[in-house]
Amino acid sequence: MKEKIFKKRSVNPNLDHLMSLFGNETMAAFINGHLIIEALLVQFIEHKKGNDERLSKLNFPTKVKKCVELKYFDVKTEAFLLMINDIRNNYAHNLGYTLTFDELFLLAENAGQVGIDFSDETIYQDKKLSKEWYGEYGIVQEIFQNTAMDLSFKMESHSGKFIFC
Image 1 (tube, rainbow, N blue to C red):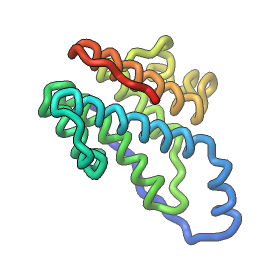
Image 2 (image 1 turned 120 degrees about the vertical axis):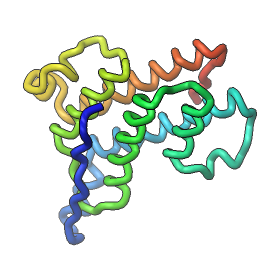
Image 3 (image 1 turned 45 degrees about the vertical axis):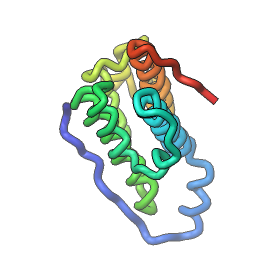
Image 4 (image 1 turned 60 degrees about the vertical axis):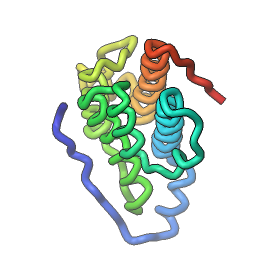
């Protein structure tokens, strides 16, 4: 896995910045993607352990760890999923955090290294073209769509079925 470069950056609150958050498509896509992955993690755990309302109370890293313990993922996938969570935490807990394209490209590189299947390897192999063709929003969308799809295939390989609702 590549080294993390996700730095916490905060700013003092000001009205212009606060209002700009409502139109931040990249942040919205990232947080929604994180929520989808987290819901899928719960489905993995429930597949082996059964329905348990307490699962919703577990934090994201604990859910990932349980999936590793249940042999759904290896440690490289665990590290990739925890990178996603680090970024989500930066958005959630650091006012003014702005995800850079460099950080997104690093995340895409790590996705490629753990075997997330992209239809176009440019997204994680050619930084210049990736930025030009996908941009921040597009790379977030691709990472989460393809990660969710790969997780669904992994569930099927364990005789399970994802329920997207």
